[in-house]
View (cartoon, rainbow, N blue to C red):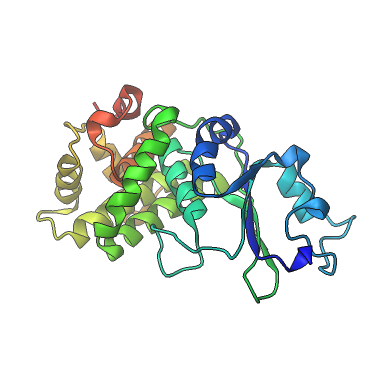
Length: 285
């Protein structure tokens, strides 16, 4: 019967809808994911639909499925037993879709995530999760390199990640996404900037780089092939104001933007400084 079929499905949130359609779909199709337009998608006629499952009822403050479809860029689904093949976070119930969402968040500067995930592994019950809703208002994303190159760099990152120390990667990802959520959920760009410094400093400390905190991070970024970074000291001041002095910083959103760029550049795996767009690094030089 149809509703016994195993599957996994994501509704991916709306940032970069054009990118998903033009550049993301070919990769997903090659990996046997089916890509659907949320405007033409119906759960009742979808693959693996189970009429015995109680779905969100009309009249709720947010009807989860309807809300997610209205705010989705694409629907992607895998027909068959879900394959948990994440390279970014192996040994977890995550897929290559989770990896691509994480990479696109770093690459584009806009928090990409799934709004809705539902799945039924073979022989197991149906389950669904609605992710935290992140606002995409009032923030101009800044692509680190041309949008059409994102898939090339993503596939290169997939080949590099298995050789990277897992603790180091986890530190970078944890602090970067903590910073990104601080801005997009709470709207505090200067706190986000301070957390981006923590992202950088945690890497420098883990690698055992010598010197005081500022020198460690400066050495770390130079090892990433960055040129001289005169605005790096502004980022360091943000961190000190926020976490040492307990004061609100007198620095501006422009300083926070430089921090955002630094945090992303650190973990854009598979990319060299020469790959970045000029306006991505212009805040440093």
